[in-house]
Image (cartoon, rainbow, N blue to C red; front, side):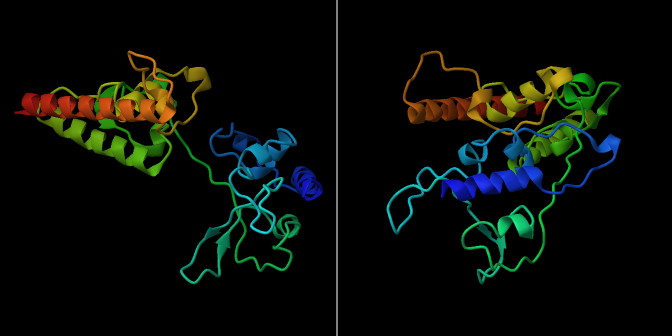
Length: 237
């Protein structure tokens, strides 16, 4: 119901919130905003974000609702479902009026370096080539991205210890493109980033079909990574 959605947005905006210390006032990561912050950005922000109803018709009417809250199961028996806010507000949502809340949500804080201003292209300190960084600390967002930068840090440290030059995957690969972003972004506006096709350079020929374009980008990236791995192995040998 539209009225129920609007009441929820109003409640999120007017709810009591913790006021942190001045040193806690840091910019939010735009890719992972608190629900209250999204509500403050406009009446329709949530409805076009985490409460987006597209593709989720009501099975009783076959019509798309005004907004949808999706819960994630947290235990094997299906008794615990995750939601990110407090009891009073979320009990306004149809179906949750009598829900029992096992724990309340909280915002986690990621601490990360200003990588463009402080690290090299292969994520080492500028004054110590053997001091390498990886993961969320360098401004990559996501488990796979953190793992990939960690693997690269290990490879480069091994190379440095044996007297070889550090390596960075080509920008046609997703890891290479991500490194280009975190190293080459504007230091004054640096924000964490996860892997996405928008980081990759365009294809030589324009392809309108989105699925085909992504497949071609992926194929190009795999080819570039194979060539890179082969060249790196030859240099190491």
